[in-house]
Length: 329
Ligand SMILES: NC(=O)c1ccc[n+]([C@@H]2O[C@H](COP(=O)([O-])OP(=O)(O)OC[C@H]3O[C@@H](n4cnc5c(N)ncnc54)[C@H](O)[C@@H]3O)[C@@H](O)[C@H]2O)c1
Image 1 (tube, protein in one colour):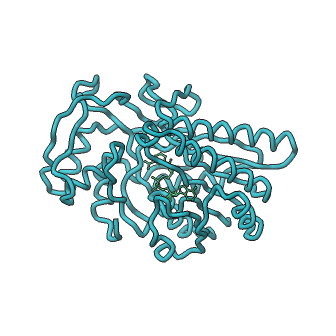
Image 2: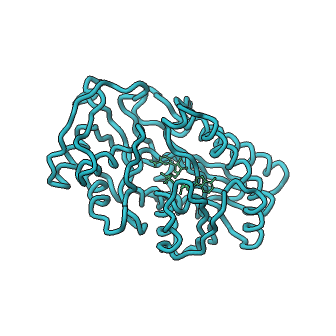
Image 3: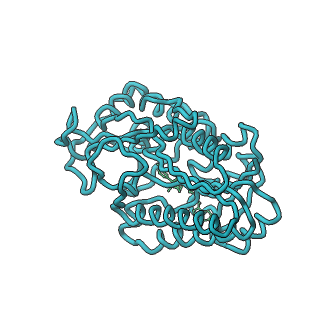
């Protein structure tokens, strides 16, 4: 398949370029480098388009000239806390850009679209294993923008079907992505924001960029009192994109949860990182953070029914893959 990947200079997008290329797909990357790596084009070795994914006319011209079979849309503003402080830029980039990109995709007649969504659309569902049809309740502007894009895709697929024009879309809701693998780059170094990922903070401590790791809340109703999350390796996310892109049928709108279904507590993650790194990882016990649910795990049986299965199931192996990745972070 000929695939255009937006957000190709970012963490997951750069892994997707590498992973889908290895599987024999003809991949092009697109990014405007607002958050991605400026050196991505030279490391990824695929045709690269330095464009804003929301520049409808420029993207339309590219899609028309290159005849892609599928657009996989990873480009987005991804910081929850920034979206809470200032929602408008996140709405503009996530919903505005996706709307204009989708318009270009429809005008150019690209038949398939795969969208990066997130478990942040779900909120605190109150159930540990969350299914795709469970009610959603985004708890941040970031989550709201992704939920709005999901709705836009549903309505676009249904309008295309009514018009007799085959168009299909898949929505992949990732749980907590971590690790490094197929891509040329390791796990990105954390910024100074409050919503950096747990694995990034642990890497910071192990690699000397931070003094300690803070556990927020030790009195949750979980076996060791700390929050439990479902961690998924970045290469397994890319594998899900490959399977879903291949299997999409004309006119379909599918939604999948991408997680292992295995819970790891914050305390267990710290222990696993200590063992993988041989570093003591000093810990400070902090208060709960508002909005943190006690346990959130994916029910990914719908994705597994397509033949997908995660290759990494333990946080220890995911963390070790980031720690030992030979590429630049
Ligand atoms: N990292 C996670 O744990 C996680 C979890 C759930 C969902 N997601 C989703 O996965 C996708 C990729 O996330 P990531 O962690 O790789 O983020 P990232 O910030 O590393 O990558 C995003 C990339 O998109 C590019 N970009 C943003 N807006 C653009 C635009 N308008 N035009 C062109 N390029 C643009 C950025 O420059 C960057 O390279 C996002 O859609 C995100 O919401 C990520």
